[in-house]
Amino acid sequence: MPDKRKLHFWQLVFVFGAITILALAANYGYGSMKQPGMMNDTMGSMMGLMHLKNITVSDLVKQQERLESIQGQAQTQNHSNHHATSGSFLKTAHYLTTAAVILLLPFIIAGSIFLAIVWIK
Amino acid sequence: MKNVRFDFIIHWLWTIVFALLVLSGLAMVGAKYGWILNYDIASADYIHRLLAAVYVMLTFISVAIEVIRGIKGDDKKLTWFIIGKSGYQLFTFITTLIFIITGVIIWVCMDSNIAAVSFALYIHEKLTYIVIASVIWHIYVKCHALLWPKKTEAKKNSMEAGK
Image 1: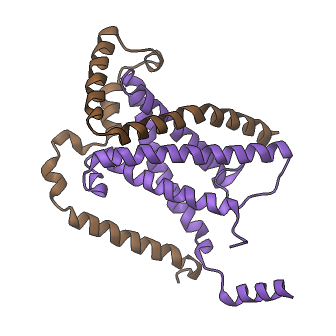
Image 2: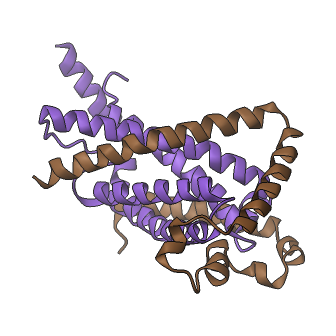
Image 3: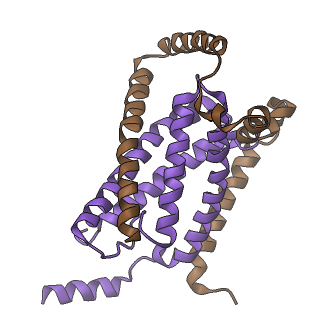
C-alpha cells in the first residue's frame, strides 16, 4: 500500500519523467549524429583521463611552463577578440559576475570558518 | 503574505537558481546530456556563469545571516533555511562551499593551469551527481511540505486572529 503522504513526490516524479522523455524524443538521433567517439564521455572524465593521470600536488598550484603561458596569452587574445565582436552586454556581464564571485568568496570563506568555530563550541 | 518567512523565500530562490544551474551545467558536461538544452553549449555557458554569480550572492547572504545569528547567540532553528549546523542543512553548506571553490578555480585558472582546472572540474562534476541524488532524497523526505495549507484551517486562523 503506497504511503499517501508521499503522493506529491510521485506526482513530481511522473511530471519530470514525462518532460525528460518528451525532451529525449524531440532530440532523438540528433546528438548521435553530432558526437565523435570520445565525446560520449563526460567533460570531467575526459579531463581526468587527459590531465590528471600523472600530476602531483605541486602541479595544482604552480603556473604552467613559459611556452605554454605564451600560447595561453595568444589564445586569450584570440578569445578576447572573439568576445569583443559579440557585444558589450556580454563583456559587462562577464566583468560583473567575475567581480561578484571573486570579491564575495573571501567573505564566504571567512564566515564559514567563523560558523565552524561557533557551531563546534 | 504577512506570515511568509525570510528563510522560506531564500529556500525557494535557492531552489530555482540551483535547478537552473544543474540544467545548464549538465548540458555542458558532454554530449551525453547535451539534449537538455538542445546542444546549445554557448547559451548553457552564459546561463551557468550568470546564475553562478547569483548563487554566490545567495550563499553570501545566508552565511552573513548565520554569522549575525551566531554573534547574537540566536539558537532558534530556521526550518526552511539552506544552511545550518546539522542534517541536510550542513550537507548543503559543505557541498555549496566545494561547488563555489572548485567553480572559482575553473573560472580563474582556465587559461593558466590546466591541471588545477581538470582537478576542479572533475570534483565539480562528480559532486553534482551526488547532490542531485541527495536533492531527490530530500524532496522525498520533505514532500509533506508541498501540501497547501487547508482553507478551513487558514480561515479558522484568520478568524481567531480577528477576535
